[in-house]
Image (cartoon, rainbow, N blue to C red; front, side, top):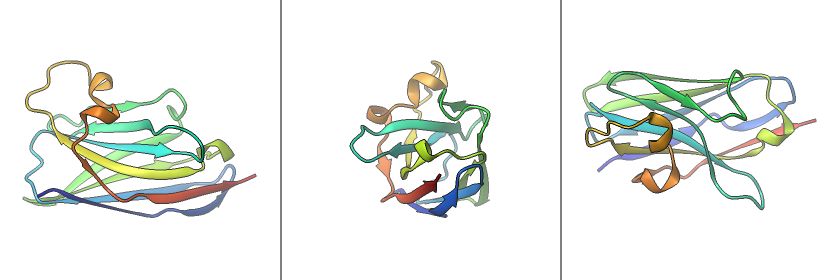
Amino acid sequence: EVQLVESGGGLVQAGGSLRLSCEASGSTFDDYVIAWFRQAPGKEREGVSCVRTSDLSTYYSHSVNGRFTISTISSDNTKNTVFLQMNSVRPEDTAVYYCAAKDTLDWSGPLENFCVEYHMEYWGKGTLVTVSS
């Protein structure tokens, strides 16, 4: 079974940088979407960024586009690590960040349309990011 473990959260000052990691195991991840979502206090969970493992296409939400970068490496046949490099962070980036994943099953539509909560099958437990002003 697919397991996702996030790390890298913490306290950072506004304008600073932080890198989150998601270690994914339990599948070959040949054609998965692996995503970062976040949930701020009192708000609904929202999609931040996604990467499709088969072609490395990416999607960013409007709120993080140009500041965050998603990337992925495969360490062996059944492990994949996805990073979220967060630059120029803002207090409104404060949230619990979750890693999520789903086999695309040959999804042919826009990645943006797949990078939504109800498409995701597997979830990590989250890592807290706090941005101080």
